[in-house]
Structures are given as structure tokens and as C-alpha cells.
Image (cartoon, rainbow, N blue to C red; front, side, top):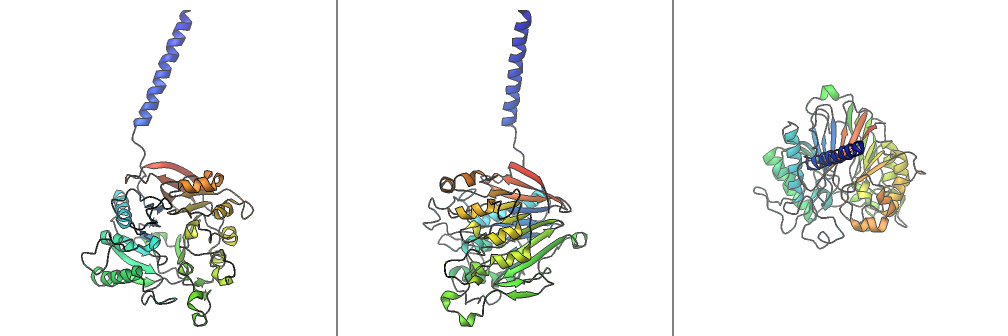
Length: 424
């Protein structure tokens, strides 16, 4: 009896002890994303709920931002359940949230908050920013702050690369409000801030280069311009070829679309490869000419990669069989802002073992409940459906992790860590 009573007291004390441990763990501060360190490659897919923004810290500390989307916050569609909500809130506009994220993380990593490069893949609002009736006017130039123009109000930018500089006339003169505002910004930024503007140069690896310590990493880091305006690297030297036919024989309706003109780049660090292709399409509409499929010829020169941010947010006209079979990404990032992202058939192709065999982990920045209801089981396979997504590549480029962050605060709170993966 005494032994039984003693055993009961022991297990009671043990239960209380374990409960206290669980309470202690629940109340302890959550882990924060460790700062970037020299030799690492960081790729931050920043979720604002309003478009694309991907921030890079290269192994020597060189920085780059690809896109700075900002949908019109006053439009009926942006405010509808069809679109994702603003993150972390609608109190500030996406450009300011992006700049704050970069500034805070660079300061935490003991780097001077600035961008060596910014690239706008193409001229759509979810990639460059849309002027709206509430966009603040610049205190200096004759333009408003939205997307990339707002990021530049908070962060110095040394060079901005787009597909249109200096005349913005391909495939026809670009005169819409977004581009007009951006061109006024470019004129002012060039004259008063010394920012260099350039058109993307396909085939080249000397347009985006390491600026802090190039000698140490020159042999392991390469950023190759793959395509812009349909001018595609051939895979040999710096040679290019034009995918699109001569414009003189085309009507206005037959001209290449804005998405088709997207900039595509491949980043390589040691064995690790990452591809970004803007909104380039790959699935032909009925009756469309074959040259409207940009993904297939692009995929042939890009080759296998470890990680890929989906073209056109995974919309139904993207991620064709040829692209997926050639790239074979181990990690896939879906930048979501609409219930169109991703298409059901696109997700089916991404997971298809017939297109390419092997494991793949898919992450989304902010999946809508509407998508989950319609698509169902395929979305249940996502490794993460909400938050900032950080790819951190270890020194030398042989291994990498994917780290998801809570996007409801600015604290870089870690939600989950995946990997390490072996780079290919």
C-alpha cells in the first residue's frame, strides 16, 4: 500500500513537472530569424499581400530587390475577398513595408541599409506599384510614392534595371499612368540621387555583380540575365536570339504582351541555383502562335534549379510541362495575392511525378481560404501557406534551408524550418 501511495505521489509530481515545462515553453519568446552572415546567400520572399517583392543578400553583402508590387489599395477588387489582405496591415503602403523589412534586417545583420540593385521584371502594378488616389506625393519630384518609387524614398538604390529604359517604347510606347509616374521618378532619381538606370542585357553576367568583396566569391556566384523583351540567351557565351517576330508585321492585338516581355534571371551560388521569371507565360491560348510560349525556350537554357519562384504567381497560363521537366525544382515558391494563384491544373503539374520524379516542397506566401475549398487536397500538401519565405544557402552553396516567418509582425519570428536540403 505504501509503495502504491508513493508511486501515485511520484506520478502526480511528474505530471505537474511536465505541465510546468509545457507552460514554460508556451510562454517563452519565439525564435527569431538569425542575422545574415558573410558567406551565406539569403533570398527573402517578402509578403505584403499586394504583389511580389524578393530581397537578396549575396554572400559578400551585395543586395538586390526583384520587384516591389503595390496594388491600388482603393480598388474594389483589391478590397474584395478575391484578393489577399494587406500584410502586416493596411496602415502603411507596401513600398514602406518592404523598405522597413529590408532596413530592419540589414541593420540586424550589421549591414548598411541600402540596395545595390533593384530590378523590375515588367511593368505591372503587382511588380512595380500602382499610383492611386491615396498615394503620397514625393516631397521632391513630380511623382507619387508607390511600389519601387516608395521603396526608394526610404532606401538608397545604386542601380535600377528594367526592361524599357531609356525610351520605354517596346513593343509600343508605354504611356500608362504607372510607367509615366515611374519615368518621372527615374528622371528625378538620376539627377538628384545618382541612381543608375539600365535596360536588362540578356546573356550577360556583368550587369549584376558582387560589389563588396567580389574576389572572394567571384568563382562561385553568378547572376545570368536569361531573357528580356523576348531576347533570349542562347546558352553560349553572351549570344542571344529573338523569340518574337518583327513587330512591323503585327497588329496592335498581336504584339507581345507585357507578361511575355518579363525579365528572367538565374542566380547561381556554388551548386545552388534559383530562377526568377516574372510573369512569363507558357500555356498557349487556343489559336495563339507558338512564340507566345516563352517558358519552353527559356527552360532549355536555364536547366535544373534548386528553387524557383513560380512564373505569373502560378496562374493558369504558367508552369508548363516543358519548364517543370527542365527546371525540376526541389523548392517551389508561390507568391500569392489573388484567388487565381495558383491554378488547379498548375498545382497538379507541379506535383506530377510523371513530369519529373522526386520530392518537392511547395511554399505559399498567403493562400486564400477560397483556394483551399476549391482545390482541396493538393493545397493540403503545402509545407507552408502563410508568411514570408526565406531561403538561406550555407557558405559554398552546397546546402540550404527554407525558413518561414510570421508576417503579422515585423519581428522576424520563425514559424518553421525546413531542410537542410542538398543543392544539386
